[in-house]
Length: 434
Image (cartoon, one colour):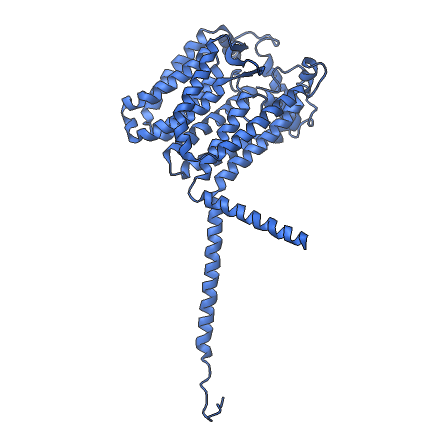
């Protein structure tokens, strides 16, 4: 190429330009990959939050539908022909529990540390009310209290479980490596647990005691208690359980029936378990259809409460029961992911305690229905009908969600997702206005 001065301009070095352009494109691609990796990391960071929240909502939805189906016949009999009375009562508890759980999920972690001691003291005071004229009993258990002026009974032991989980998280996190010394195990952790369990046992609620033992074991395990102490506790617990079974004729009858050494009368103590198994067997793979259960026609006692899993298996079949089991597995995955990833020992221990509470209660309930355990009166979490159990469980899940929000990277991931949603809504709104 000739310039105006008649000299030749040097041609561009194409061989050099191409590597430079290629390097620029590579750098841009790497930047995009890095941004994508950061976005993926943010999504993974908030995975625990979505697993716990999503599984809880799905179990709650299934539970509301199944309570409606399982309770209609008994509701007609007990409420002057109204088939929806019991269902509306359950909806009331869900409507109360959901906002409380949502509020609990927004409380900063530091506030839960401050609330641990007051929560335990308040729950113990509530439990002590079973020794006053406010106490109410059912099936031999005296673990409810009546609230004057409201016309509502409350089971304080359900809220004691949540308070105990938070308190153990605080106490064991502060103890740390000192748990190798039995004196630090005893004071105040073991003594507080004995007080809580003793008060519930005084109300003759053996089922709730078993769930509380699982809660305590999970907290101490994650807290770092040496394994040898679990062996000692297991032997002592088995001896105590045998003693309390032996002094209760109704418990002895249920245990003997479960072992096949009791009365063979089909209308006797094994009536409930037998009809629960018949319901599961009738359902087959796909079920007889939603609302078409035969066992709920006053054949199966507590169909909407302790034995709702049998009605679910009858109406939705094996597939329905597997869905429920899968959702509990997802819930467990999310909670134990928080235990593994969280940096705060308090959050780890409290989450482990709540996880063991909910999952142990679910396993006990399902084990009773399928005949692997003797009849123990505990509801299926988030699915069975019940007021105190539903509200306390939703609040406990809210606490776990609050801990999930403070996982490493989770807060940033959730804020990023909200920002994307807001920008998307803004774009959609702008297009509509245009």
